[in-house]
Length: 590
Ligand code: ARG
Image (tube, rainbow, N blue to C red; front, side):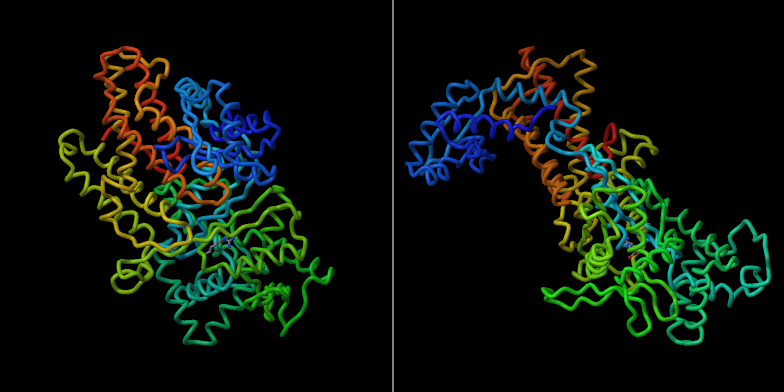
């Protein structure tokens, strides 16, 4: 496997330190912030000098003398108190780019130990249309899934459907109120139940808010819904049959949203899948003394002495016997851990649920619900705000449906595409529609992912869909331009050849390509797709500078032209791969 350029350099510089009797760890090398001084920099001479009680410039000079012997560098200079600035020889640089280009992952997998990861994201709920809050959960979660696959991890992605709990009882009772003659409510009826759902997803989306507000005004209705929830959880046949219909039509609806956003789940499980495990779990926790009774409810205490803020106990079973969000989440951890033995379970869920996850994770540790090495992490994110800086709402103050957000983005993209010179003339209606869809999706994904995960951002489609700057459409366009250039080259019968580096812009582009492994590693470690947005942006900037200064198709010298074609092809491949991790598809032309 090819090592990253930085790790190779750190190794080489480390060998130079070792040759003069010092610890090779001092050879750690970084990308230089000052390109004018060198491409890379090593500050190890300073720490080495401190340790050896010697002069840092002297050590730096000795290390440089060793490095000169390798023949790998075009320039080595000593700066300030003892910084070593390095510039690679063109042979070393082009050789490295050829190496990583021969690797399907550009060297990003070296040094990574494959893991088994469960990613929990998306998180839609029965009867509720996915809303703006699920946008980030889906986009970020899917990009982390693709990032992990790129690294070679085994990924199980689970949508964790919200399908258990009081909302189910409210729905059952509201449907009963409206259609009391349906067989689902008759306790003596023994089946079979109708195959078709008595409610459509549109009806459910009206039923749920109606039931929810009724429960606030009518205590008897709320009580009935509570006991219906309990009976459902206990397995009352009619309720189960009705619930199954509600779940099925709701899932079907979310599939459309997930398809539009390119999200892939390997499991379509939900809270309800824990139902059989819950009594076993409750019995075990009681037996072991992990749980206790408090005000008639079964709870697990999770506060610790060092807590700065209040940490309420996790409630597992209320006094009426109903189980809670925390119960199903704890049971889900136990089931996942038994079924998959994962190395980590990651939850991509709104940052406002952080207390919930803290309670669940602590309870899971305390109750030995999983093996201690298994890593649990809540990957939170900030809110999507309107232009007024407050969480995005519809004009009349309602929740914004995910579908309408996506449709608006595609609509805005269609407008931009139409206004872009030449587009409408060059493509037929089908291709224009396909391009607009890709542009619209790219716009919302890049805008979402390029922000620091935890910060809020303002949803501004006009800005997101621009074909310039840090936008999805611009990154996509940069890749399409390379595609069409390579197509032209093929038509002219031009072929790629050995990489050469004669111009500074070529070297800079190669350095950008070589920095992918670090970007991937940091993005994965911090669960931060924004690092990859930055990488692909920097790559397209370097490509622009290269394209501006170095003719490709118009280059008269055949070797140079062939090398540049190769460089373009490598750049395109890396851009498409990184955009692919961000969930952005690049059209053939635009
Ligand atoms: N259904 C939840 C919601 O809409 C999100 C579920 C997140 N995953 C989990 N394991 N709790 O808020």
